[in-house]
Amino acid sequence: DIQMTQSPASLSASLEEIVTITCQASQDIGNWLAWYQQKPGKSPQLLIYGATSLADGVPSRFSGSRSGTQYSLKISRLQVEDIGIYYCLQAYSAPYTFGAGTKLELK
Amino acid sequence: EVQLVESGGGLVQPGRSLKLSCAASGFTFSSFAMAWVRQAPKKGLEWVATITSGGSNTYYPDSVKGRFTISRDNAKSTLYLQMDSLRSEDTATYYCAKALTGSLFDYWGQGVMVTVSS
Image (cartoon, rainbow over all chains, first blue to last red; front, side):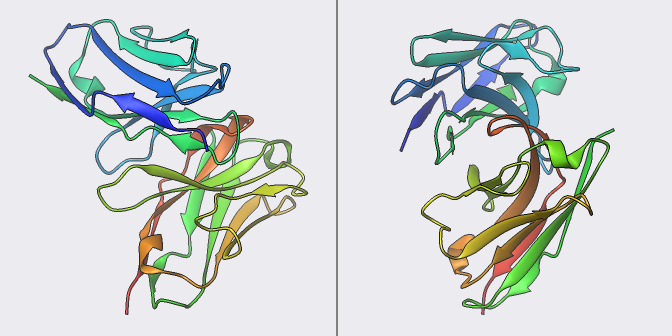
């Protein structure tokens, strides 16, 4: 099974700050990676797919990148509505696996 | 507007069965793979099952293989999850999800709670 190691587990940042979350895949998954945001009591919302493509309606301050088997989600200027838990998902091969999540809070 | 509405959750005893449904609208249901993803209380996300657009192929992780069955009725735009031999560790919110491509999901339902307890 492919393991997705997500870091950090939690993160406290200030408004307008740059935030970066990473997922390390245990093997090559190509660009079969997505990022999701989940707010309390809500279902996950797609932010990034194909490692770097921005989903419809997602603000441009969100971006995704890839370096080998390391994938990153960057929020260029943190806004209050960005608070929540972020997950990566690999869809390269079954069983499809999520990262453990990153809880993003306001400092 | 894409809508996915789950139903069928509730409290069930260990070893019993439950069937979840997901009514889809706002897109051509028969053209997309669909999936179930679950989230135990205060825990992360776990993929549970995927079914291809025509229903001919299904995929499961080892944790539910042989106990859960995903199916679909394209004429009714409805996705199902038959859950048998339920265990306490199956307690979770179950989400129906639409595939964007492969098993990358772009839309999720609001979720339905399943509690397995005696």
